[in-house]
Length: 256
Image (cartoon, rainbow, N blue to C red; front, top):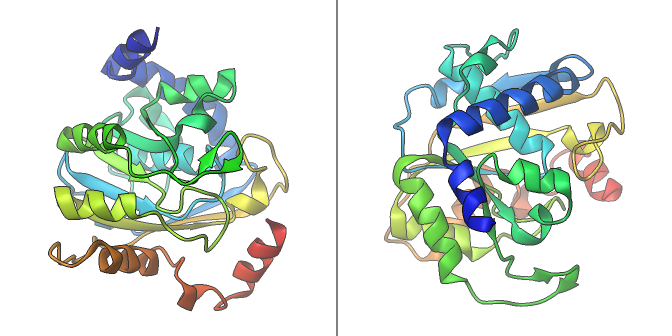
């Protein structure tokens, strides 16, 4: 059965239909019930088709990724920093995958459905069945991401958790060092306020959701993974020096 899912996940027609369905359902919650502010899409308009890694902070399981997909589709239709009416769902951008915890994507029928939209499921290095478990880097997980990067865009959340300012995992830095992708940092906010942890149920309507794409990082791939990871965490504003810079960070931490 898993092989069937993998084949479906890689079929452009199937994913186009799935993106259209998810897009139609999710558009009102992003752009009508709440307000979506997008910045920096000029930095992603002319990216190559492959070997592009988006690194972002993480606030909900699904709403973050769904929003990225909307934005990528809108950019494909030459819209800058806005979604507009979602005509783009007639021909969505599907050349993208996202890294997600295997445990999360097997949690329910709806998460399994979303997994068909391009999830690269990985075994988390410190969680298993809700318990803290230390694991080494799984080579099969890195191979999945490597294959996806070869011809597509990949979204990853270095912290692997919705908890703000959580430490990042070195796996992201290893991927950057070994495969030398274009790395685009993204900073999001407001999703934790608008939605529940899964990102599928409203918590506060009328919230401001922000997504800011920064310029691709200039990375010295010869540096140790620790230095690369530190650069990434600074770029997505989740390092220690950003922890106490704004009231929203303190509110977010208290909310979690």
